[in-house]
Image 1 (tube, rainbow, N blue to C red):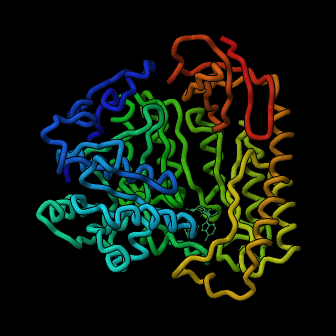
Image 2 (tube, helix red, strand yellow):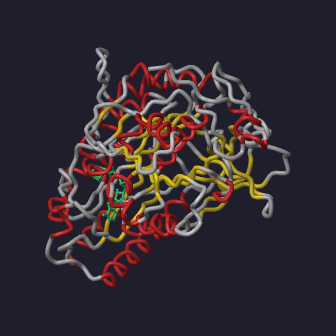
Image 3 (tube, rainbow, N blue to C red):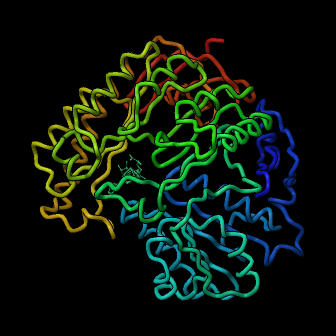
Length: 478
Ligand code: SAM
Ligand code: SF4
């Protein structure tokens, strides 16, 4: 396996944004002209368009897929009409996400003659060969567990292959690339563990991403070091169950040891991680955050339901009380740590009493924000055939109640923050409002005015002057 390299930040426009990130060039250089504006003659067969649906894992997979293509001399185009290779990296976690993908593929039904259309990711894995039957104009179908084979599959396409497939789930390898295209100039993602060995009754991930497999600690720390050398100061470690990480190398690091090691990389100022499974969330993770300022004071700990019978039916492997005990560890840390979560409402058999327990859990946990979803029946999952399905209107009603309840909690929590000052990493500018936005280490976004010409990429102290349910307004206190 070749040593991985990342393409230079300046080729992604970070330099152009005028941020203070040094535009360091790495050994494997790909210039902006090569990646974005190829010579006209090369613009046909080597052009690609890649659209991503779903989670951060998918976003980062796409950065690596793009890296594989760039490494083979392809160049990205903004408009699918201009591309020879049109790829969709798909999500099938809920039915709506999967439907969206099929609508996109359908757009090419009558106009795909000179193009290669490819479906990657979870929908590809779930639907497999059937995609070719449903959409015969598709030429490439590849699930994420087969991404290691992408160069070979792309070579088959280049040789004129019409139905090229990578669908094996039987792998103990992770997807590491020679190049990775970095789309975010301020935060770099590193996948440390792929797949999932849990079997939550509602979830497609074990069927679409395969069994759990971790990268070696050396490869993760090496990548973090190269990112730091390239000017990144913030890293986010990724995995469907990131804290189930187990180093397959003789060093045998567990997740907490890896966290500490990545935080110790010179030049890295912030380390985030997502998503943590409550079952593998141990007190030592809180101790590491407490002791290591570089580890961000934010934990995303999806609970899904506040009712133990529903958690049991979901096969979540913990009870309400066990989950709340973990919340209490986080709350008793010396540093205030922000907690966020995921919920599913309307799981089959969820009673009104179960749902009320979810609302009381919101009160007890005091989350800073939550993602809440209506249960969506998915193929190949045990919940699909469970009795007592909840009608759609009832799911919508419960979702609205949960969101209203959480909005009140957030309003109160955010109002209490007025007067406090935080360091933010500035990552956006809204020209119309003349406002900058930055993230605290707890992942809160603070909007603040400034007439400075460019603050992107800077760490600045900002004092909160107003708190609403979903946003915080501040002022620069430099
Ligand atoms: N691995 C993470 C965990 O265990 O919490 C979750 C990963 S999943 C990609 C992200 C979220 O999607 C889940 O936390 C859950 O709330 C939601 N989700 C997954 N399957 C779902 C389904 N069938 N219907 C509705 N929401 C679902
Ligand atoms: Fe899906 Fe459960 Fe695995 Fe999370 S832990 S990815 S919800 S099966």
